[in-house]
Length: 143
Image (cartoon, rainbow, N blue to C red; front, side, top):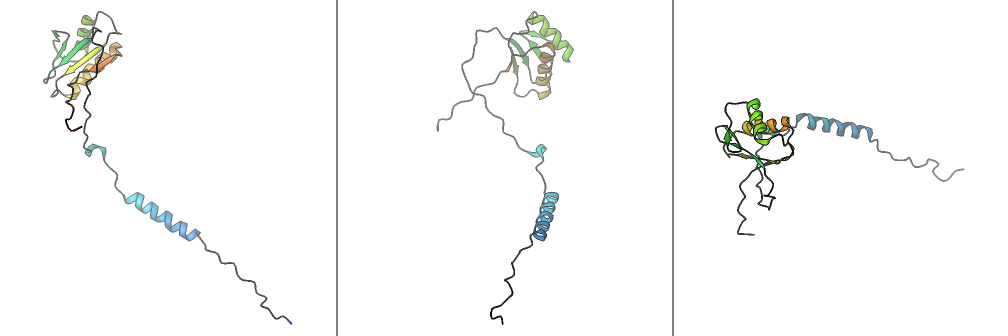
């Protein structure tokens, strides 16, 4: 005669497969219905340029862009428009020295396209030492 209970205690299990199915369904729902940031609507604050000591002894070729998009290479005005005319003016003033540093002095109200056109002309001619002139910012008195 058996006195004790012969049944072993059932092992308790939690079935996690339906839980995983529900979590993956919720994850897919939130991924598909969320909106993403559109970069064209982002407001960007551009950095200021610091005033550091630079090598001013190197004779740099200067390209000036005014607010109407006209170019000057050195002190000579560039007649006409376009990359080809600008490239000819740069070659005349640089005397074939493509290792010479170049400084672009663009008016703050000039179009971005005018500056990019000058950079494109310099890149096509093989200039690699390029800098853009900026006005140094005043240090804050609160620091």
